[in-house]
Image (cartoon, rainbow, N blue to C red; front, side, top):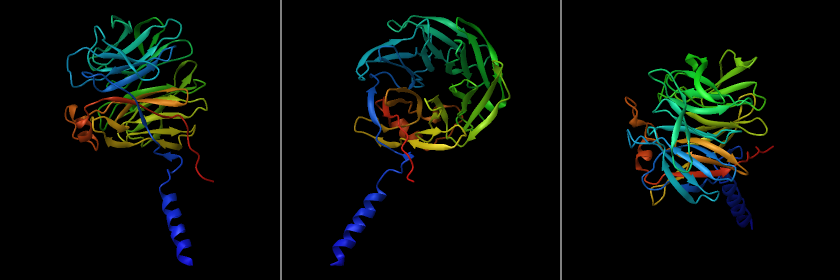
Length: 337
């Protein structure tokens, strides 16, 4: 008579072991859209007022070529692709400017920010960065409409006014230089809800740097948290929690105000029969819309950087044939009490 009960207990115990670990929730990541043939390595992502998605590419496979801007309908249906005139193939962030509606695209390869016609790809220079090693990457805005740009190789956050023009070095520090792998330092950035500080990811050093704001200017930068493996795109949610994509560990990490990790979401689950990523692989940027966070799978083989040996995901990234954008529920599962 004991055996059936023993068997049930064993089955129940095994089933419980299969449940996701709440805050460390590798929940189902679903494909939202795929890039058309001839486009690779989606990087920046943004949404217009009608819910259409705009994605640009950091396409190291096509050196010297124009960057691509790809538009998807709210349901992920491909709409169009245009080449961004005057750009190079390494496009970073992009956003619609509040008030003007200008679509601004960050062009690392061209050391500039371009104002781009989203229908034709025609462009004009909006901001041009100085310095031989300049590489603008991430972009955000303050409440006054000023534009902040990370410079991945010069350890700088630049600031320009709402009309663009020549930027000034808002903060420059060794904390924003990469001393590790990859050689990309300052990358994603975001203000907290009250804009008391700007948070910047140093991708190569696995750090989030906090820059306090004192009378509108940059205060003394400090390390906010260590050991996020390749921080890139980030945003603060309605509860002032910081969401960060970790491109070297294929996940999203969520931090509370103290820097404590309260969730790790998503994971890499191999490639499907098309050669498309299942889950998350080298995520670059994300954008929250409604109940979901939309993530670009950059899927970059780090061996393409000069002098960089392979990483854990390099061989997987080299096998990707179809590049995609995925989405994950924008929720933080509670830990059991």
